[in-house]
Length: 349
Image (cartoon, rainbow, N blue to C red; front, side):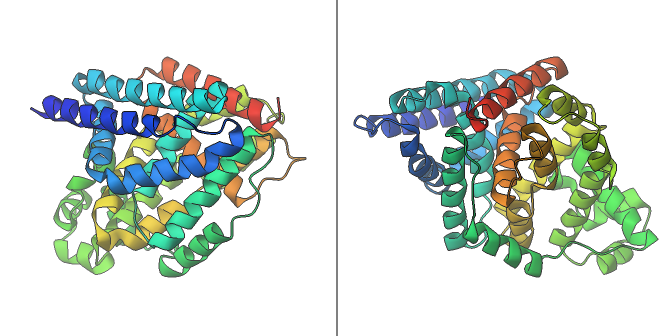
């Protein structure tokens, strides 16, 4: 039944793609036509086709835990690959089709998290404009709307301070539940059982679901990127060595678990308005790791900005989504090829 539901959703999504392509019959060629179109398509898909967008994301998560959803996930991949191949071909930038598809995947995932509509839409325009700059060999430039989003997110949902031993124990239990079965199992009662504490203690330390999920995300992120370790690793790598960068990213303990758990938390933020502050954090306070990797890959003599980091973060999220269900070797090979293709554009080659 669930597979049939996905087939129906894919048929409707294919109709949406076809209708969009019909509207592009007289599209002006050139990379300069892409940014506005990309932002429009992302917003149209996330706002106008929200049910279909959720179906796509649910399938991406399901295939990570159940290989029986592999064929359904592959049909989604085929649909989007064909769509972006047609779009980029009409714009005369066919070589950018796959990497633009990855950016669409990642940024449309993030754009489903609603925070402040006007700020979110303006920041989306900035990111797509930055992507167009990248394809032309230039860095993204400034992003005043994203800067506003980041400042507001910091004020409304500041990063948690150091916790006591009991709170840390609760956070560890919440993270373990997310990693094993997704956010649906993260209730105060389940976390209390996992931590070996009473429900009252857990409720006192973390009063809301948003706080509990936020603590889980922090633990997962901290495990994946221990303080100072990543900076030291990248300092030892030669600038521009994309393969070495990706090897370090892929070899990190729990890297795929981190990506999957993060996707689960994002899905929760999309569905629950009470998690709006958390959604703001995920949208606008991301990119620290991406910034380090991107800076090392393009060279430290070419300083990148916050928008560049956000673009690379969205691109990486799209890669993680699209490659879910592949073997480790297949995933690593695909990520390397796509990242090298992206860097070729960014370097003006």
